Image 1 (cartoon, rainbow, N blue to C red):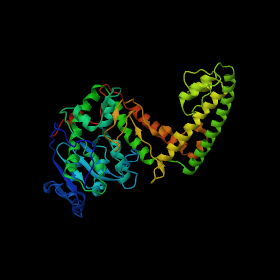
Image 2 (cartoon, rainbow, N blue to C red):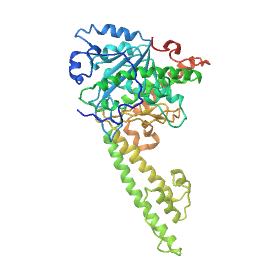
Image 3 (cartoon, helix red, strand yellow):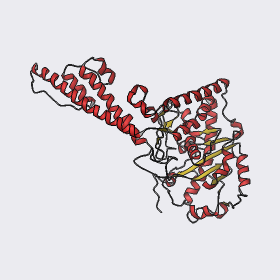
Image 4 (cartoon, rainbow, N blue to C red):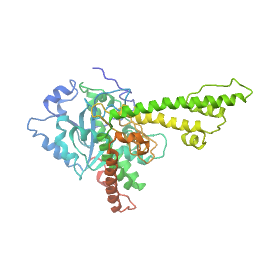
Amino acid sequence: MKRTVFEPVSTPLESKIAVKFNVVGTQEWFDTAFEEDAVLEEEKIVISEDKAELKSIVAQARSMKLIGVDTETTGDYQVENKEYTLNPVNKGTRIVLLQLGNEDQVWLIDPDLIEDFREVLENDDQLHLAHNWEFDFKWLLVKYKIHPRRLYCSMLAEQLLTAGLLGYKVGLADCARRYEPNNIVSKAVRSMFTRLGDGRMTRDMVKYAARDIPLLFPVFRGQSEKLIEKKLGYVANLEFDNIQVAAEMETQGYYVDQGKLNLLIRYWKQRQLALEEQILELYSKREGSARELSFFPDWSKGFDLKSNKDKHEALKRIGVELNDVKKNSLLATGDEIAILMAEYSHVLKMISTYGDNLLKKINKKTGRIHPRFAQMGSGSGGGDGRDTKDTTATGRWTGDAQQFPRKSDGLYAPLFEGEKEDAEAYFAEEIAKAKAKYEQREKTADATLPIPVSTVDGPS
C-alpha cells in the first residue's frame, strides 16, 4: 500500500536519537495492525486475556514524575476541508497508537488497552508533557472519556516565549532544533498516519512514534529555564489550565437549527435583491440629474455593489466624497444612497458569515458546529490540526466561534433558543472560579512552574 507524505521522511543531517521502546498489545493487534517486520520480536510485549503483563508497565509509567504523552491518529482526510479532517467527533476517526514514556523508556500502546492507562493520565502527582496538548486531549476525551490532568504543553510554552516575534515556528521539529542538543528531525512520517485509514503500520511509522517522546524532554528543560528567567511561570500555568477548557468547548460544540438558518438565509437574500433594486433606481435618478449638468453627458457607468472600488467611484460621481466605504463612513454621510449601501454590506455579512459559512460548519455526524481555538492568538494549523502552528502570538484567544451572531443581529436570536445565554452564564461562572483560584496564588518573583526543573534534569 503506497502512502503519500508531504516532505522527505529524513534529512542528510537528521539526528540519530537512541530510544528504548516496547510495543504493547494483544496478539491479534500485532497480527492485523502492522506490516511484516514492522515490530521486532524483542520489542513486543504481548498482552494476554487476563492482562497480567500490564500491571508492571502501568506501575512503571505511574512512577514517572514527568511523563511524555502523544497519540497517532487517522481518519477521513479531506484536502479541501482541513477543519473537518482529523476531528475526533467525526465518523471513522480513530487513535492508532498511544505513546507514553520518558527518555529511558517508551511504550507504544494498543488502542484497545488505552483505558488501562487511565490512572496514569488522570492524576495530579505526575506532570504530563505533550506538544499541542489540546489535540491529544480531545482525542482521549472523545474516544475514551479520559480527562488528562496536570498538563505541560511545549507548543503553548513556545508560543508564550516567542510572542510578538515574527517568523518563529512552534512545531515540535522546530522546537527540537532550538534547544540543546538541537536535534534535527523530519516530521513527514506523521502524514503516513494521517492517511493510514484501515492500512497497516510500517517500520518507519513505529520508529517515528517512539522517537517523538524523548524529543519532548530537552525542549521542556530549555523552555522551563526560560520561563523562570522571564518570570512567565504564572502565565504558563494559566495557559496550561485552559487547555482542557479549549478542548472541551471544541468537542462539545454548539447547536444551530438548520431549518431556521435556511429560512434566515432566504430572508437576507430577498432583502439583498430588494436593496440592489432600490439603490440602483435611486442612483440612476441622481446620476441622471448630475449628467444633465455635466459637459460629458454620456459618463454613465454601471457598478457592482459588492465591489468597494465600484461603490467608491459611483458615490464620487454623484458628489459623495469618501476616503473609504466602510459601514460607519457610509452612515456618517447622511446620504440616502450611502446609508442603503451600508445596510447592503450588513446584509451580505448576514448571508455569508452568519449564514452560508455557519451552514457549512455544521458537522454531519453530530449536527453541531465545533469551533477551533488558538489560545495564544494568531496560529494556523495544518491538515492534522497540530505541529504546523506558527506564531506571532498575540496573547489573546482567537477562534472561529467569534463569528457567533450577536443579539444585536436581531433575526438570528431564535436560532439558538437561549443556548448562547446559557453558555455565557456557564463560562462566566467558570471564569469567576479561575480568577478566584489565581488570586489566591502569590505571584512570587521566581514564578514557579508546575514542576521544578531540578527534578527532571535528564535521563538517569
